[in-house]
Amino acid sequence: MKDVWILDRSEREAADLVRALPGLAYSVHVWSDPRALLAALDERRPDLVVLEHGIESMTPVEVLRAIKEVERRLPIVVVAETTSTRGAIESMREGAYDYLPRETLPGGLEDAARRALSSDGRVIRTIGSPGPGDVTDLGAIVGKTPEMIEIHKLIGQVAMTGAAVLINGEAGTGKELVARAVHYNSNRRDRPFVALNCAALPGDSLDAELFGWTDGGGIEAGAGRFEQANRGTVFLDEIDRAGLATQGRILSVLESGYFERPHARTRTKVDVRVIAATDRSLVRLMKEGHFRVDLFYRLKVVSLFIPPLRDRRPDIPFLAEHFLERAKTEMKREIEGMSPDVVDLLESYPWPGNVRELEHAIERAVALNRTGVLSPEDFDVFEAAGEGAPATPDEGRAAGDLAATVRAEFERLAEAGTPSIDGAVVSAVERLLAEEALARVGGNQVRAAQLLGISRNTLRKRLTGGER
View 1 (cartoon, rainbow, N blue to C red):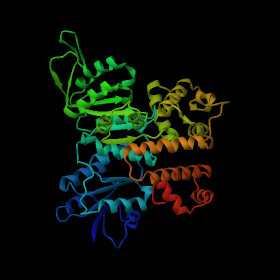
View 2: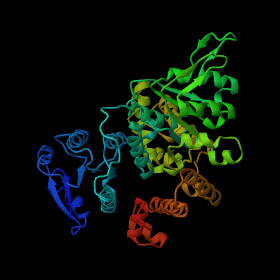
View 3: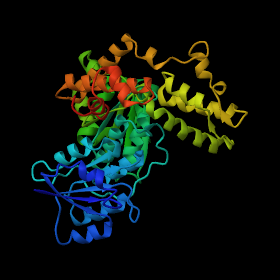
View 4: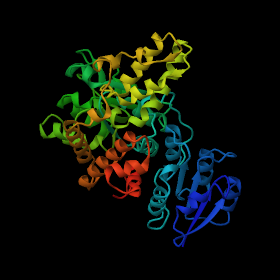
């Protein structure tokens, strides 16, 4: 029988966590004092620790670090009452096996416990405590939808590994912010983060910008981005726009750490982490002969997809609040908040420019507002949508858009090497239907299930990514 320890504020508070674990399979012990739990580790070791994020006497990060100092291989699942970008990243970076929103109980915790305790129950998911990291502005990666929580967790997992990361997503979704989050949560955080948009320069100029340049006599004249980022991170946005020759030189750096400047007599050695991003399908570009297959597989050690804003509408109010608070501070404006009409319009507008467009819309509204409360009249994007009214969610889910979404999801899963594309796509569509039904009936799960013709339990499983 597996021994599971739960750390929560009290036994009463831990009741939901206990009920999520099948009683016959686990021996469960509840702790309310993290120091008592840490002291008990000197005498015996559990198979799993479930840590409630709301412990007051010590922060979750402090508890995680302390447990990992005693037993690095002990799996820890963090359950968060209120999920946050920073909480998910820090929990995974510090060695948590998983980070779960409390609303996913009981199925989420039961599944995480089963996975963590598979084999010998000593699974290492991340590489332990790297010390504090920071991202000064998480911006576009703010969000509480399941897709964004998974991104936050993945950032925390991969940050310290040094692995190359390939980020895919539409323009304006926040790919560079994700790359910065990976860098500033890694052991390279005190070294340079150097970003370059490969679409901004033609072939020869891009080569010089990346690898430096010399005059015709071999005298070195300038360092490129790879040298500037030595011992740090290079972020190559729109990597698909680089020519095949430049792709070959990037591949050489990834494989050997060396490169040569044009006309130079010696090779240059660098130690850099490469994070690349694209808004196009590299699989399709490879088939067309426009992208190197060997570079693709070197870049996609870890693949990460950022969904467009229209596919994560529940995150819009959080993002809007984030940008509003920042704009108020920067512009020194006294704005109390947004009217309910604004929130409704923000959630229904399709945001073709994604998070970047939302950010600029909030900034403009703050700059022009005269009343102290943002109203629809402060936003020009709604007027541009047609007769002052934005597209509705139903219009945004027309058959053509659905087909395009399925095709895009298929391409993403194919690139990621997902073993069951059919099941993954069907799950994504079912979750989308569940979210739309909930939005239509004001969040009432019983009415949403009736609208879809399914049971309430099935609705919940689709919303949390459980079995169909």
